[in-house]
Image (cartoon, rainbow, N blue to C red; front, side, top):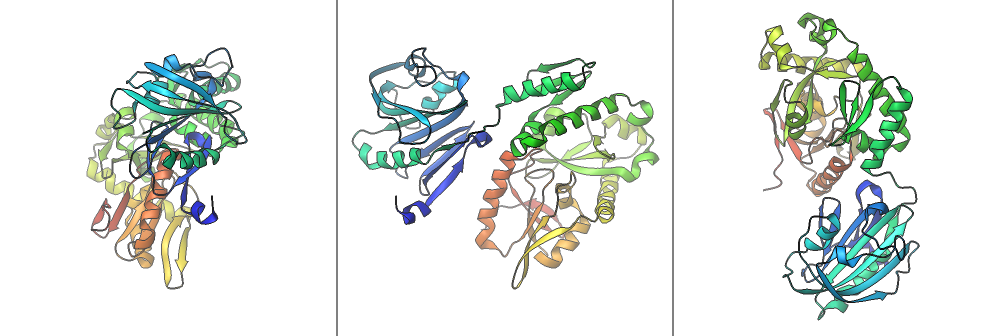
Length: 431
């Protein structure tokens, strides 16, 4: 492939950063449930790629790990032939054949049942298994035999660009087991066990591991510190009496803060806490800030205090402005010769994304970005603001925000927001 051709290709990184590859920029990319699907613009063939911890693959016992049990993959198959492996640094095997495709329950059958436009009859396919240590990729290519050669060369180039990480992060089920092992080692007197739904039962508390797993993928060296700190905090909170869990309003009024949460997280995990639906699938909740943590305000506590939603919201916004004045969080301005056009928070903070609600932040940002600007809050600890005049990079920023939303811990929204003097709304693109 020439340098010019390669420059027109896009780079893709798979879930958990287990693998990466390049593909033509004009091919259609679809990603769902960790499965990547690539198709040429004409849509006449489909390349489907999935990456897995090898122990979950349907294998025969003849060639451990590198031979597929086709009876489990296809309802019916015929004319299967073993092909030449790929000339790449990773171990691989290749096959071709024909099969009847039909939806099944298992993921490896879904790999081939998601192909759009294929009737339920005999289909031509190629299949590759690519392995590096504990990671194995399953690649299927379904095609029209009359035009196979046209796209097959490109498929080969895509597969020869594959790079599998040599030190992969553990999948969620192994991560959960590591968390349990760490909890039992650090806190042997506390009863611990795993629960369905990727959760840990720790004493009387339940810990959802989703955000911890995302943090682990981004910074694996912080794994033990993050888990140990969280478990120690849970123990501390469990020792609180009524004075700490149901304090008087005057004791905490200066520490009540607004915090953004995805609407799904609020409804699924915190339905009894004070909050309200907002835009872009977000919700605004309210917390009491502590030295190393925060805790959500319960509906019953609001009733005890005798205040309403409007009052706690206004108080929280006032405290938010005061918080950032006290902590002197610096903003990084990305500028060109004619002035700044982008603002990013200088360091992570649990209330960074909440600043999109702040009157003080709006007044500060408008001096650089104008009276109307865009904001991105892919996760709780990150805020980016961008001038609306930067139309040439808005699409790229929107793509980056969507990517960060999928990878960062405490994810919020993959949508851009428009911030004005009248409030915040969802960005709908250039009309």
